[in-house]
Image 1 (spheres, rainbow, N blue to C red):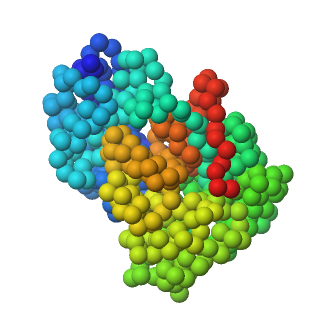
Image 2 (image 1 turned 90 degrees about the vertical axis):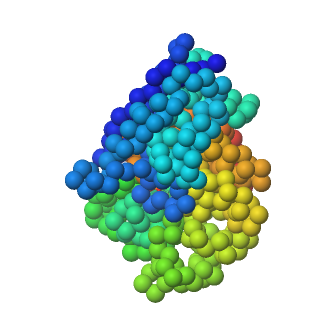
Image 3 (image 1 turned 180 degrees about the vertical axis):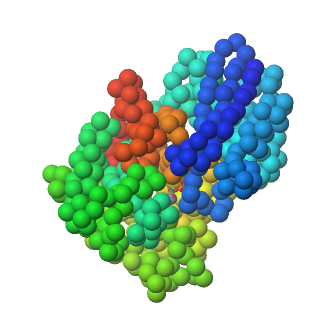
Length: 423
Ligand code: PGA
Ligand code: ZN
């Protein structure tokens, strides 16, 4: 039975140069695991607490030394020497030690760093790949490669607000392998960069997740450029490559109105706008089309487009089992965006995953806008057979670390990617 021999943690920096946590777990009898945790910028209100120091003299309050201390002292004091039968036992011990509904005592960044480093250590001890260990942890006998959904254009909080919506992603639906998906995406990205240089006369700046962010005159201009870039790459929009959107609409929702422009529109009009876009462009997934607290209207959005498009909840659900249960009952969504740091342990994220699957939802396993070079997300998406993975663009190493891991898993394991459903 695994026993934690030593637990250490340090503050390191994420892809925005902000502090985050790295942890190392050593098991008695062998098995060592290291992992680091990501951090969001357009966070959902219901996310578990990411503990920051709040000291304005250091990293403008963003330091993670308190969370590091929580691992080194509180968690290590309590768990070192304990026998922990498996991942669930470790995670339940962390949940109990924290004792709050949203990890306000220890910080979800602290608990997740321990949860993940333990997973790596346990995988290492049993001579399994991380994805094999994660698959076994949820009794998944048929791991699959997820289909990449890749940032082409960025707006909102991840860029300079050029357009109000956050991500326009490409989905290489005709790709049969990760290898093909990446090669197709490269062509589209390069075509889009050339297009932008011609159209806007600028070398397009890239946003937090590596998406291109030129000064689009409108949201629809962005979709048109995406479709044009797909064509320019010699591919067929809607057949080879589709579009996924993260509207991140909580960011521009105020007093019951959605401010796509200065005027603002109500929820019904917002649903009409989204439906119109979905009908006009090859859009297969719309994330956070409505705001995180607009529960009343989400079911209407699902009725309007849910037969032909994923109605994907990120801020709405926050990988939180209670919110997913509520959404299943209300028929508010048909897909889950899974971000483990929104909830703080692998076991709670697994419960969120299982719930979503129990109602036939699709799952997109997602990175955060602030990432590290750690690649566990790829193993998670494979081990749990996520339908899609959302990592960002193909230009920055904290993103490529995950794509490269997928490429290696594909080559080394012989696992396959399922055909895109619902297209
Ligand atoms: P975040 O954004 O990581 O900045 O929260 C990602 C998303 O909204 O999907
Ligand atoms: Zn989102």
